[in-house]
Structures are given as C-alpha cells and as structure tokens.
Length: 323
Image (cartoon, rainbow, N blue to C red):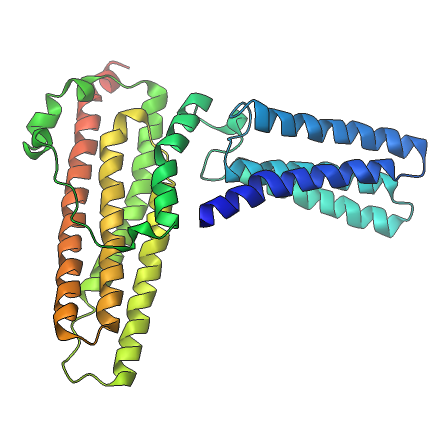
C-alpha cells in the first residue's frame, strides 16, 4: 500500500500538477512575449510527460524515482517562466535561485545510486524494465505488511548444495561477461560489501541482545523492547536498501542470495521485537528460536552469495587476462 501511494504521488500527481500549473500561469501572463515563452516552456514539459508516460523507460526510468526526476525538471522550467515574468530585481533573483535549486535537485537525482536518467546510466532501458518488473511484486508484498510473519526459508537447490565445484561447472556460470558487465559487477560487489557490513552489525546487535529474565520488570521490558524496535527499524531499512540494488544479469543467483539474507535478518529482528513484547514464556521461547533460526539462514545465504561471486570472478578471469 505504501509503495502504491508513493507511485501515485510521485509518478502522476506531482508531475502532472506542475504541468497544469505551468500551463495556467502561462495563459495568465499579461504580456504576449511572456505568454509565448510560457507556451514554449509548457510544450517542453508536456513533451517530457508524454515521453515518460507513453514511451516508458525511454529517457527516464518509469518508476517513482523517474517521476521525482520529471517533477524537478518541470519545476526548473516553471522557475524559468517566473524568472522571465518577474518585474522587480529581487523577485527575478529569488526565482533565479529557485530555478538553480531545482536544477541542482534534477542533476542530483539523475546521478544518484538508482539509475534514473537513462542518458547518465550504465543500464539499458530493457535491463531497467526487467528488474523493475522482477521485484515489483516482492516489494509490494513487503510494503503491504505480508512479510511480517516468520516463514521457513526455502532450501537451496540440489545443484547449489554441491558447493563451488557444482556452480563452477554450470553452463550459465561459464558465460563470459563483457567489459561493461564486469565493471558493473565490481560496483555491485562494492555496494553489497557495504550492505553486508550493515547486515553483520545488525546480526551482532541481535546476538548481543541476550534473553529476558523470567521476573523482568516493566521498566526493563520497556527498555529492551525499545532496543529491539531500533534493531527492527534498522533491519527494515536495510532490507529496502538491498531490494534497491541493481546488478548485472549474470549475478542474478548471487543477488537472490543477498536478498534472502536481508529478508532473514529482517525477520530475525521482527521476531526479536516480538520476543521482547511477549509475556507468555512459551511464545517467548518460540519467537527467540525463530530469531536464531533466521540468523543461521542469513549466514548461510551470505556464504552462498560469496561463493557465487567468487565463481563469477574466477570464471571471467581468463577474459581479463587476455585483455
């Protein structure tokens, strides 16, 4: 539900609202020259809107990030219109600053972590569309709160249980990656290393949380529940961060493992928070056991992630040496 609200607000309400306001302000101008300039700027905004909505992933990624980028581009043109229309120097200066700030926001979003302006992105429109579609259902179910219940993590396929040798002999793993894909893989590994460092810190906090004594006081339970809530919030934020990582197609298996690890950490933190709130001893034991099981699942997923990454790098090493 939260993601749906964000999509409606950032992809439709905000960009289209700025478009209509710009058109109305252009029509309300007193001078003909201002009306002409407003019409030209409005035309630019309408063209950007049409490309965004009808030619999806052509120059801006068709998601909430792209809608935000489109809105700032429209606001920048809106600022240009008001700069031209202003009669007094203070008003011109203020509107000029507004335009500059909107341009700064546009440039910042265009170059930020998630590829948004496709001209500046290393990903093709087809890659962006495929990855957005792949994780849309998963993100929606998480935002709707369906992931709050603990579930046994799926077991690894038989071929994966064989270890590094089974993966190294896989035909998919032997596919040589292009230079651009190798470059993206290195950037992806760097981002994943940061995520895993945060993941390890959260797991350490969970393990250091300890257990509640049988005769715990209300004040102590409140203190521990607040601590568990902070851990749960950090795990939830990290889970969203992991879902937002973009990766080369060849690292899809590894990426599924780090997503599984992140989800296991989130569920472990959720179980820990539930454990801190529970007063029933049997339910406490159940939640604590689930928490420990999910930590073990997360560590196993991280181990498989690094095996996949090492296989990818080793299988593409000959290509690097030839170059």
